[in-house]
Length: 261
Image (cartoon, rainbow, N blue to C red; front, side, top):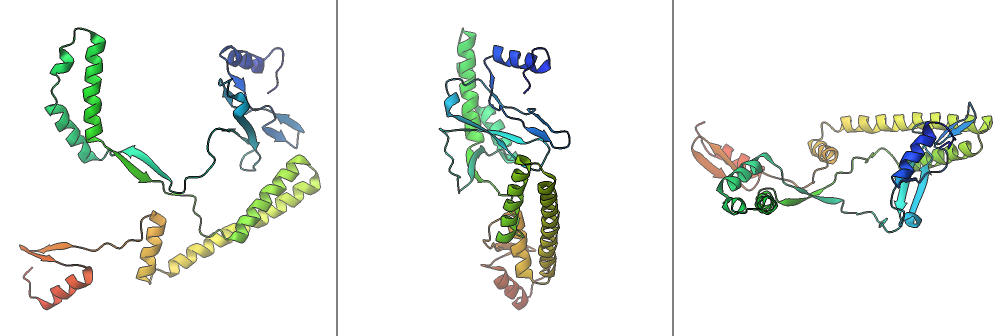
């Protein structure tokens, strides 16, 4: 950020400093090779002065945008990736709202109205309301679906993407016409190869339509559902109830029995 004596950037810094916020990014985040300019436009401000030595700021050099992405890592945080990728949330299904209304209707609010002090009355009311919410909307564990999965990316294509990113970094460090031409040619070829790989993968999926088992497997893979097979356990025909262990058994029973529909 250009810290000029008079200007908007200086006014911004003075405002942030007056509120005990200091910038973490000190290098340019936008480099224009055509104009030969480098500007610090993107930043991260922090007011955790005591923890400043444990914060590692950085700039991610990428060709996604003409602005580089900024980031900051804390040394105290764990860098290990959670393989389970689970998170806790409340069960907010529509039927839980009806249960919540019943709990509220049957709750004795007398205790909250007997206090002479407004703060005590509010604390009691909040405690009763929180208890009702915890009972009606319990905490459940859900699995995060990884939507970044791109099955057409082979190990070779991933290696080519890494090489393309490395060439981009080298080009930005030494912005010569030769490095720029090399990077643009490689990027264009890689983009075309990635597009062809995705088209070939999707075409192969379309060819599996006639294979029912394969089609269900692909649908479950796309939806991120489990491969566990479910079967019908109960069905009704008129007033008769027939139990079956799987769909095949139920079909055989229908064939061997005379039922009036």
